[in-house]
Image (cartoon, rainbow, N blue to C red):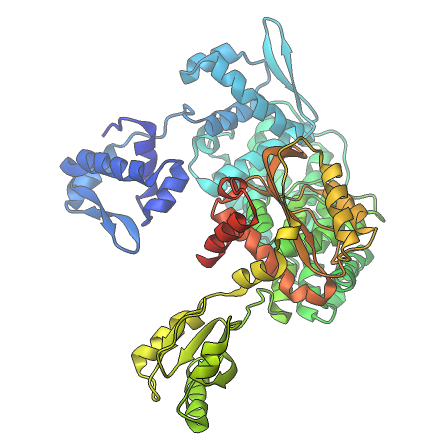
Length: 636
């Protein structure tokens, strides 16, 4: 079966083994849901003669329904192997990377363009991303007239870059053509898989599945590089466990046999470092004798306690988890081994508060050491810190619903209704019971909703009318109001206001913006004079860009006297590091409201999920902004 275009082939592959809704398919393919429906119709027309159709199941999504298994199996058997031709820009970047990292000679873009059926200009456009990727490993590309483009850099960097790339591809598709046909010698990964499992089992070395895959890919890359005459330079690493030393020696023997060349001592030493850097520690924390590990764990927990008011110092489980992770992390940091963290962007966006706390703590600690801890490593630490916070604090900060009871049937009846509601919904906070006349005389209602035994007019809050003995239906109606998450709307009401809202249409730089906003907050008594310096220092560590043009500048720690959020809309954009910010929220959070800090961050994560930046940026005043913001946060 031949697909009219590449997107149909992608859609067909996506729906082979899982059921996916329209929205998810549209997001993965970067098209509208209408296009998805049209593509499904086209696919079903193609599949009609092969005994299968994609059926839409309400509530779950599209799934493959096979009417004739025999005909469909014959279709699967006749499908050709994946072509060794990249089709998309991201695929071309990956293929270019592998070609440059494995080629002994200069490569001409004209030749690659002819091979992949694209123009030279297209490949020239892809080269910017290739150079940026290689630069992370101190690798460079040099162009020589009439010869082409050649890669230059250390052998360690070349192997690290190639292994990281293959590891990322293997996470997505273990049968990717770059893994099975292009980058590695045929049959080597399979040979190594058996040998590594036997060796690690014999020497009682535990690695995660991802860690073992990474070591296996590194060994496969080493086999190819050594067989082609590219050994590692001199290097030694003896500060590892005896079991790691013996395992590395055995694996080096396997690599030597597969490569067909004698190995230098540096190969075995570098292999020891890779195994030690990914080894899962089984020993109890009390047995770990590493001053650096212990010092870093204590520093992080004490920093979080003193700067953010979250006390995790007595959490033995968190202390043990951090200690066992940091022991191998320091090995990686010491030898500059970069371990991929595929969840990094998700961690930043979905756990921004825990990210900031951990980043600030690690940055403070780095001032006293010669090592630099990468964002990938910090991301893993954030997960441990986040679990510790969830164990000890109501980190989501759920504000419980408040209800006003209106009852003219007497005190006893009011108490009975209160008891029924408290038994059915224990999270309810009953603020009091008043008569219908008192209710009608009130201009506003501060509670979230009203439960009344008589018909009452709404005063900007919902009213549920119940009988003296509430029926199941009436309790269900109350339940719909009880189970609404009011944390984010309440936070918007409490911490966002018109005084701290600004639209900037003229050019302004980041530092001027910080100075102007912080000066106003200082004059109003929200912050001290050193707040702006802390905001600048935090921005210098890592950009506070959350994503999609939304930035969250803030201080290192909870330094404000009172909590407030300063909202800035910049339709023309403000330069924010390498990106451009259009919606800026300057956070000033006090220690006294530390438990609410997570919910404040959660508002901005909601804006990101809603892709609300463009709509927020189009608001003409604070009223429009607040109305739109309320719509966004009320949907989640």
